[in-house]
Length: 269
Image (cartoon, rainbow, N blue to C red; front, side, top):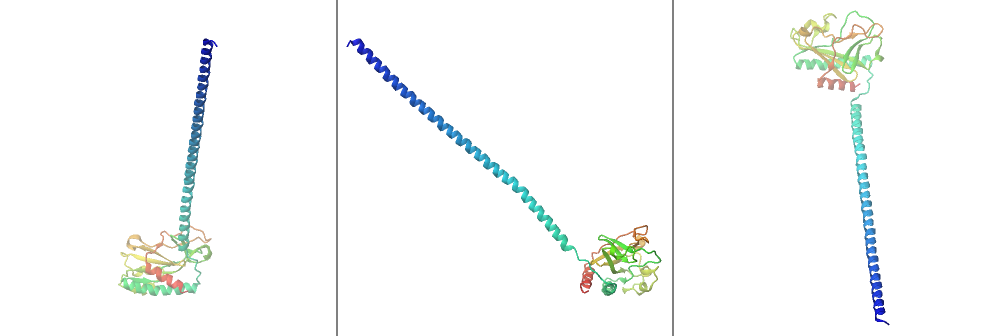
């Protein structure tokens, strides 16, 4: 062969070798690039998937927290209502049905207790807590924080229209003549005179009203300052409220001893 032809073959062979080598390098580079791309894509997907899972987990946690908070509040509120209802139920007392004779017996026993209490307090006491002259046909009643208390049943509207009925009562006061204990003057006085016949009008008067709901009601006034008690009123002849209602109302007495005594007497019936 000619030297020139040999040289050309050698050159062509070298070029082909270089090209082939270059193609392999390029292929390798592309394989590497593609591999890195796939890897990065995978990592990106995993990262995105991880973020989504984290977000979902976070949302679930947040959702759980949000949904649990009202449940807790509702439970607390429910317990609060239940506790309140239990408390109310525990303070409510069953209605006590007492005959006229039983009421009189309780009232007499309470007066004996009141006489001793009056002696301790250097006061007079009388059973004449309620008196009135000529009147109509309506029931007589008193106002209290627990509602109306029927004091005298005339049938209009009658005992069934009241939740609370009077068992009796008494009046404590300072006697003008210094009487301590049962005031015989007041016991024997006329309806018009009542206990006013022998009281010191400058000193407080305590009227006790005993309810068949096991409650003691009290009205305190000073005659010289307040005039008459005016704590009892009468309904109209048809049993409706009219112009003769009480001008003043009883309060629940703070006399714990009196409450305990009434509770004892009712409990013995």
